[in-house]
Image 1 (cartoon, rainbow, N blue to C red):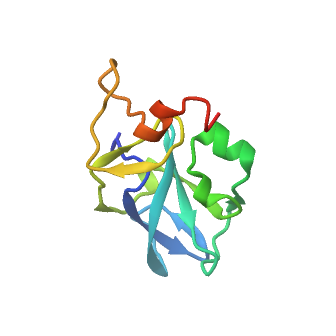
Image 2: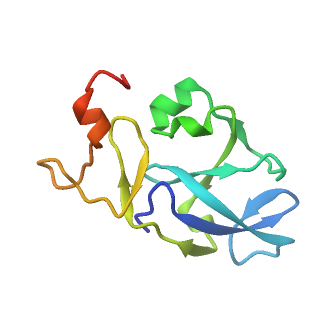
Length: 130
């Protein structure tokens, strides 16, 4: 697995408004921002001026279940399996807060598990974002 996280940029090949496997014929290459990572793939932000088959709107349930930042509410996202990624454009250095899901560039884990970040605001007001 590529071990990408929200904020990283990937490129995918597009044919007839559908993301295709990198070795297939394509019409164009688009760059997307990852908004959520799952075990087998990634959810990417699709700007309103792109038309892409299979897009869904972000709602409060998806924000909670997929750990998507609230700034993507009512925006379009699409699911991209790892083998559909053509290229890694930019890998962000940093982490997302486990509670509010905000991305902090250059952040390092600050919890005992050595993998998790809880931002200062969430540590000061633990019930604020729940």
